[in-house]
Length: 155
Image (cartoon, rainbow, N blue to C red; front, side):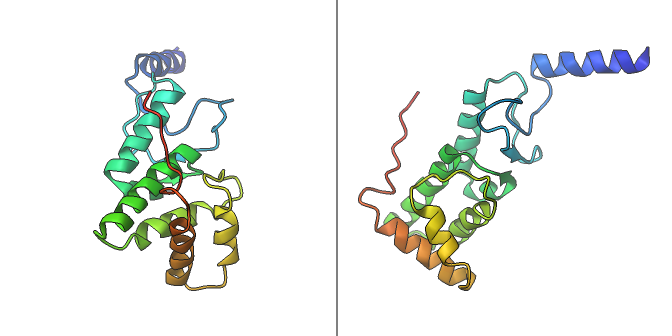
């Protein structure tokens, strides 16, 4: 009886949003995406669109948190790319640390490509040092016609 009661309580907690999630629902387009619950307080009653929006806002506010996401969605990557672009444009610090997080995310073939050609640039620089790899990616991003073509429509 106690296990059944605990299971019912866990279900009720999840449905009411008292529990936090660390992945999109099963069967979702980005079901492989995972994040560390300790860094993201995502209520279990949110729909996938709101979950992704909350994660992107977290990345925009604290970009180093991107390192705690496995298989980030293209939208999450674009949020990080927007921060990188801002740092490059304003010259308010070298974005190499953020580029390293992006490169690290692309180690997995399951990570979807946010920009056409980005994976090819990252894979072409496999034999380079981390700083050379970051420079290669920054050169690729700097050569983009618009600021990385990052245009997010406000919902």
